[in-house]
Image 1 (cartoon, helix red, strand yellow):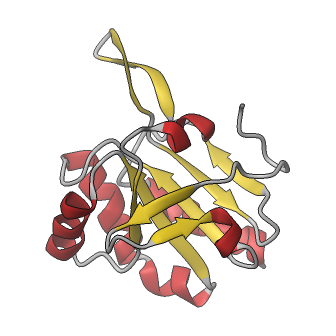
Image 2: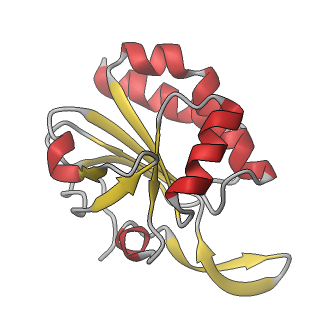
Length: 157
């Protein structure tokens, strides 16, 4: 199933940093950003997470919920969150089933070599549970959070 703007976001239930269940159905009524990243505490993933952290005040003012999603477990997420003082939740998808539903896991090319892995991407979901914006492949992790904020400001205004 491909992610399409204007269509319903695929349902999911994942575990957060503290072991609590987070389900899409429980987020209805809120704007939600799901950003998918390969691994905690790696250079690109850290830049992206810290970018969202550094823009947290304007994102929070808009009332948006932000979740980073990776295959890492809760213990890894806890270390990553603590080390970089991340003010938003991280969700664990070790089976990668949710990431597959969101086109965030599949074939990718790195240095000319094809492999299967997490595709750095982002989805904004509106309060009705529909996909408002989808970045299929994020090229520059450090610059991406600012683009997400800009899109949110336009969508919510």
